[in-house]
Amino acid sequence: MSEQQDYEPRVVAFLCKWCSSAGSDLAGVSRIQYPANATPITVPCTGAISPMYILSAFNKGADGVLVSGCHIGDCHYLEGNYLARRKMYLIMKLLEFIGVEQNRFRMSWVSAAEGAKFAQVITDFVGDLQQLGPQDKLKRAENK
Amino acid sequence: MIKLQDIRDTARDMLAKGEARAVIGYRRGSRGMLAEPAFLTRPEEADELVWDPTCFHNLSLYLVHDRKHLAHARKTAGAPVAVIAKGCDARSIVVLLQEHYFQREDVYIIGVSCEGTGVVDERKLAGHLNGAQAISAAFDGDDFVFTTAEGEKRLPAREVMADRCLECCSPFPKEHNLAFGEDKTGRQLEAPFAALDRFEAQGAGERWDNWARHFDRCIRCFACRSVCPMCYCDECVVDSITFPVTTATTAEEKASRIRWIERSAARSENITYLMTRAMHLAGRCTDCGECDRACPVNVPIRLLNNKMEKEAREQFGFEPGASIGGPSLVASFLDNDPGNFIR
Image (tube, rainbow over all chains, first blue to last red; front, side, top):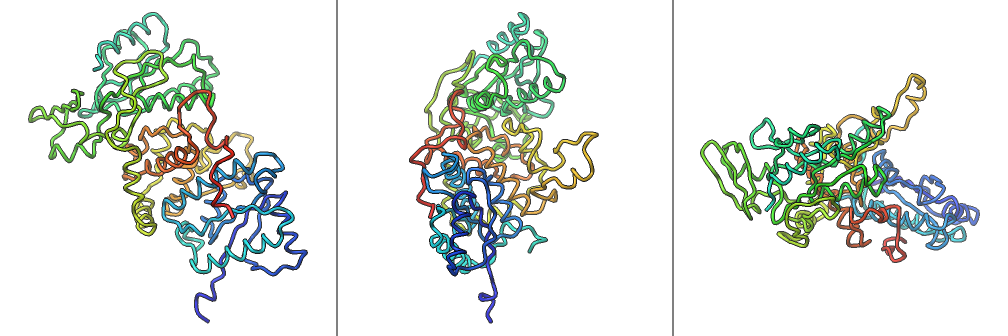
């Protein structure tokens, strides 16, 4: 087997408790097949995600970080995802600025009814990460 | 042109009449041409004040120190503290007021306009003096005049000015109680973000190669954090020794605190530190450039902050330090914020 095939990207997925997390559940109970590379971390709201979580995930060895929340207008707390959109835009630009590959960070809106979309998002993300190979730019030496 | 005597007279008057508890300004330092921050409490000290191209410090930092000191001593402020502020420094004060760090009446802003020039960049100057040591510096129209052992050296300001001053469009302190110098808002010596744009013109690979070298060099002395008036948190998320410890703190509590990054100055930790700092300063940094100047290993920290400022301006129409009542960048949003990056 070539080295490329051995490599399984590790994705840290921050999922909003009210939608994307439920969306991932729906993907599961609907028996949709998708890669098992994502480690889900349920958060109360995407607005509660500090950019530090993302940096920390990369620091601890994530190959990709996904942030997924409710569609605009559907936030349980009314405006959390609007705030997240701004913050995530900034951290995305900052990562890009220092030269981290654009495809390592992704954000999506997945509602509780979109199990199929969740599966698709993960499949696409893992596919893109497979092409990029391991992330070692932001990774702590002891985790390499 | 600003007359130094006017600044001195104002400071003397304020201290004599008790209108200010202290005046924070600049005085001649003990090394070469450099000015240093001065804290005056007696009227007769007012003649120590100077105003020259080496007055680069952002004195709003000491307003933060003062506020912390008062809180520690459980004292109330009383008379305000007067502070000399350039355009960028005044914007820093506005951000601090925006965040309710202190009240407007606690501070008396003596604004000084940088007019057509700004402050000197020591690294750029060294290239022009061929090893000579400047013992004084002075503004003169569009030039800076330096005195060295060999005599006077006149240099066009734009050749030795700090990048941030070249790119500055608002050298006049908009928020002030009293202002000296001409209002040259809108002047443009170089396009805003010129240094950033030059850096960004490189490909992602080159950018990473550059940053990797910079991040490797960082010794995490936290000088950038120490000179920054916006880094006022008592507990710094990236520095575990700042976490409060009291006699009641158990060993278990100490051990179970989240350590976001390790204290070793390894590249990965330095990246996390500098990026976190850039995020914390997004929409708050007023580009006074002190972090960049204070860095002992020349990490271009200003570029990271500039990047955030540029994105904030272009995408969200946000101007840091524009008005005291204005919203903060990350605690506000617009319906038409960019969202096309979201799948």
